[in-house]
Length: 333
Image 1 (cartoon, rainbow, N blue to C red):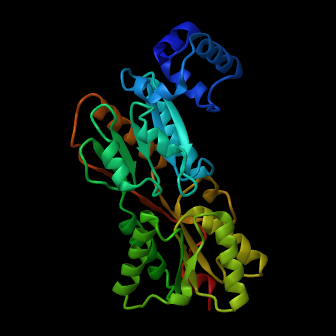
Image 2 (image 1 turned 180 degrees about the horizontal axis):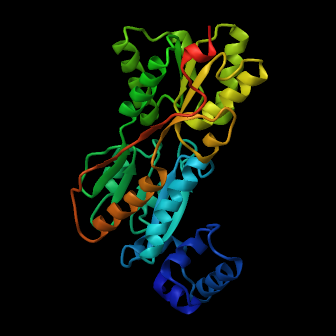
Image 3 (image 1 turned 135 degrees about the vertical axis):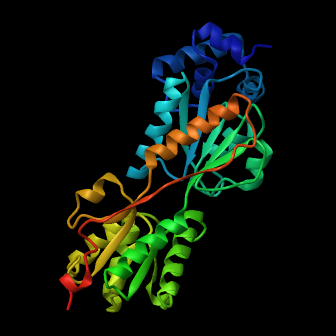
């Protein structure tokens, strides 16, 4: 019976290219895909043997699973991973984890790559523990799962959010709302905990009416602005758990006639490129997106080289002060 190695040899391509072509992945050129399919037909190769064959040989590919492949945050993250993997002659197969049972789960179950970098709450911890092994290590981003051959790269979301809200308090704002992402996202939860801790330390309580939902998207931030305007109860400032929501929020408020920062201050999280170009420029927490990716790739290669039980790495964040959160006394009476 023909194997994936036989198909790769006949087609004159790598095993990983055969795997991608047979699974109709967009990373393979049309002429290469046709060459692979022709070789598979000639050898009467059965694609359902891919997972078994890949266990016998290195694919020289790394899998990357993200909540979404779009957005400015992920582009820097992917670049950090790709720069390191390319230098080590590996390719990256990037996949999204959208829906109740994303197709990317099969890549983990069938171990179609040499290892995985995962940034998604959709991938169950039990699956991660079951899949991880010496020849299939896993690195998690902004998430921890205790298991051999699994490690994590994170930032301290709680501390970073706490420091951002502390700045808003120092600037003189007392009514501070929180604009959050999905409730099941660990980074959103930890940023909320930081927001909450900062308010409590200042002797203030969290107001349910100012705990807003934006789903980590620009559209979600815009929608939150429209809801606030409709209700007519505006806080003095809003801490948004990511920049995309903050930018949508500012756009929606400005369209509704609210001056930013004259009538309301806004602080974001991530420091995406657009944060320094919008007006007003956005005060935000700078998350080391490129370093997050490159560090994850480095840890994965250490695991592939035989190391195990690597400690999680926590990267530093930095608060970037711009125009959207000035001292309250300067802009408000």
